[in-house]
Length: 341
Image 1: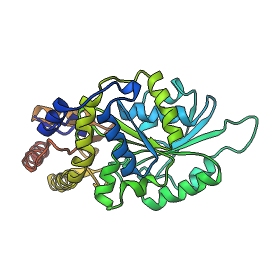
Image 2: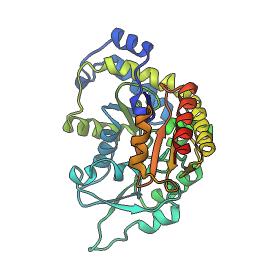
Image 3: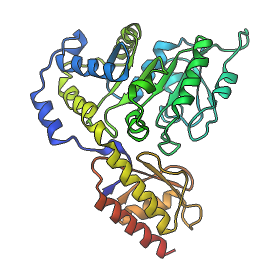
């Protein structure tokens, strides 16, 4: 079975498994796990932040950031199809007691003027704007890279209005690989950033949040409150270090496979919702007798796993466990399905 559902399905490499086996460990709640400390120091350095914290997942990292930056009754500004709004179970409301103020973006990028217009003025009837959230790359926009100049302009207006900016950078290193812009430069236009180690980077578990030392002190307490304080966590921090320092260098291979799949989808006679920029390919089957769910089922019967991404949309995600032969086979299956329509 060719599994193109997500880059979260990757299996840890042999090097990761061996690193986990040999990892030096300690109790991380007591801040005594040396492997975790090395990972956090390296992540902070790569992201240009004072400190970093290893958390169990991207969702936990994003929620900790919201909890640390805001107070109940605040409002946060974010793109209308952002992961934090769309896929995190309304956790910002359930945990932080804040409400979302969504802004329509262009391929996931909110125009800075629209963001500034969404900031609430001082008024007894209105909530205070407590946080602005960006997502790079943007999942539902087809893995689109948010332009650095957009992030810079948004950060400038946020500073003028004394509002912190958090970056959901779950796939930030995909943006780095495509743009050639460093993770540190992207993160320089944020107060805090979350990166996922278990997507394209291939670690079995974990994410990083980074920011000021003061933020990480608050984040550590929120992590504990959310049940994310772990003990001998070096066994998962060791493979995470390999993901961060080594697997980040090979993402261009996934992007190449995504571009190949994009071309194959066109050759098969299907349409694409967006041009491919990174490792996410979204096909639109509106010009076929199938809806998204039916196409996913049809692909599954032929040996390809994908996910429905809308009424007529199907998402494919390339990753470490997908090779060129898998892409060629997927294209053959798509052509075969099209020929039967």
